[in-house]
Image (cartoon, rainbow, N blue to C red):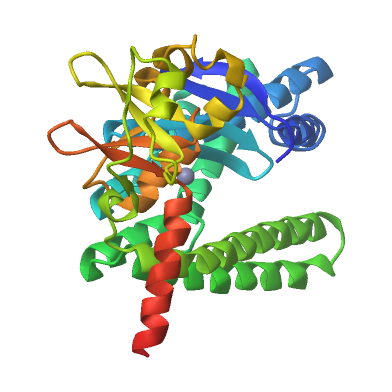
Length: 381
Ligand SMILES: [Zn+2]
């Protein structure tokens, strides 16, 4: 959604927001300052209401951030890289470098979000309870009470077992654990999402006729329902690919034993030693001791003036290890490819369980395998 505005880092996690967030902050501020607070906590100046309005709106996004941070930190604990958190109109999204490879990790990462919202809700409501009812403290208490209720609602809503909500992921992980198939879990939660999304939109449409505040609530519900429906539909569309790749490891999709380049050779020297019929598009680079040192890609070679090839050393043109995504032969294929595709270099280096170079891999592997398996499925029908 649009261009993201960087907000900084929390616990090493990059946080950005969409412009739509400013719109929503403005909307909440106005609604709270002019409508809710003067009625619920009368007797303050207009300026105080505006400050409380802004405070309430910011506190709302802060609690969304706590929810997303829950996902991000547990994902990191599960060994999955976190690209960042972005806040937008309908809440927040935590972008992971790859999908979890185990049902247990998927469950933990998903369930912690609603639990974080629940915790926020309880803390805020406790705050509202202990604050004295009148004066400025009373107004702050009112802000806390409202936000506390919203957080409890968010926790409950997110636990609805339907994709793309956290509850949908929880459901998918439980089905995955039971059946051993990630694809079956996805199918269940996607269908639940389609039903829930359509139901919410239908419910919302029924409310839009009344006009006034109920009508705004109705349209918001239609928007959320349409979002859930659309996201669930996309997840259902991706499901056959997951089904085809269930249980497939990197070893099945990689380019096995591609020619290796020695880091101290020149690019020209390496190319002359290459079989003219060679089709590999990436070559692992090894150092003097035969250890993996990087990856030389055909694209990088082609992008360099051929008259320079004999002066250019392989290690000067190759991508060093720290810029590469290194995966293992026994890693599940799809998450491995997701990590490579989101990385700096779109070709990944594959190492065996003992750490020695075994091959290279890129995103096309997914389609090759899917194609091969699809053919096998059609033939056996
Ligand atoms: Zn969540």
